[in-house]
Length: 240
Image 1 (cartoon, one colour):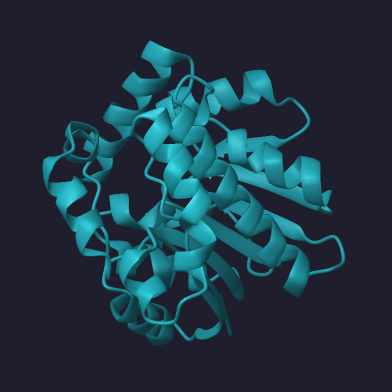
Image 2: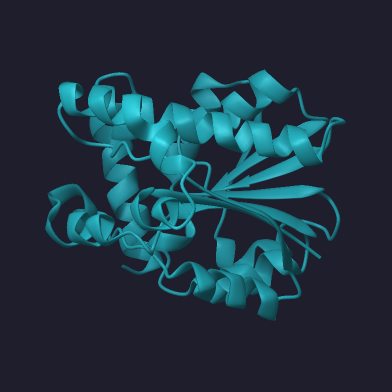
């Protein structure tokens, strides 16, 4: 799915739902899964950046998760950045204390200055891109520390979901092999500072299944090798 298709799909989501489907409260499993992601991202930021810093949330969507970073961590400043104009409109309307900018990740170095931000966050963005390596090279021009959250490309169940789930198909969802991500960032001058495999609750499943999976989630997260195969998310901090 190219940039224009991605932008159109997510613009339509915002127009239809007032925001993205998984950022609202209407789908229980999505609430469980995304809260876990938010908690893990905030914990990682707090661990390695204990003092308030400046953050660029790249692919911020409707601003829901940008606001969670802002609300919990109280950064020095935070800017949300996204290609979908309707998402940016929704974000500006809902979260007036945060700056949101429309733009393309492939050309962000033309919009932001080098070292303007101490940390960049790519939350579930790269796997929507046709040219993720280009976006990684672009962010490397302006930010020295980058956190990514991506679907775990080691997970065989996730590969099946991507192949058969109508939502995943419609939104061009895919997962990358984690060593490929490390290699792409390495080629842009980054090294891995921290990595975690986590979460087994999918965005869209019956509530009772989500509850069962949530109860056994710590077991899978804490087992070496097993967590690489069965956890659905991978969180990595790259640093120059």
